[in-house]
Length: 221
Image 1: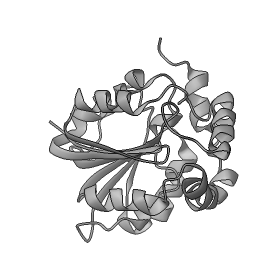
Image 2: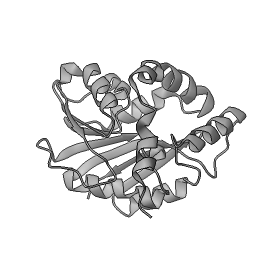
Image 3: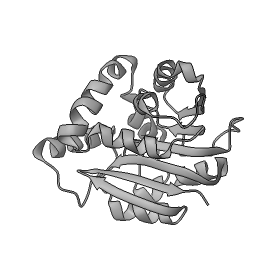
Image 4: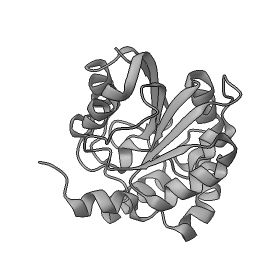
């Protein structure tokens, strides 16, 4: 069953201008380290290993990882893709020195034409667990991304899993709250399903887990 407009909006509605002011402190400073047990520097390293001179980022948040990444070129071409205009504005302002292109679109639907594609790297950090549906259903985001990638492009990201992972008490409570509000839709998300979704579409798939977070890397075909 396709996600409803309400479900899609719920996953990104929390990212309003006020909440984005505190996002980095709450998520990258507290939740990653103590609740999800995946230190933020692990995701920064993920970006450092994979970003390229022609990069697209999906579900951009505040642009934290783009701002902290070590780019392989002095002036990389960066495209931001998100449904939430507040996230696009915040991330674009944060990396204004890179003159990013912003594209407002629903990643669960086919993308519009993007002049800067094809891309040689694509980041999906903390996107999948906010999308409605199961991992097999969420995999459609990879199908919509694929036509915009060069062969061999690096596809990478991080997502919070909801099943078959050990959670501390704080993680269980926060996970339940976020799922009840529709901020997360990851109760049934497993590492096994993530690997299957990636291997069906990409080569050189590598998935590693830190706490309840799965970090993934792959290459476009």
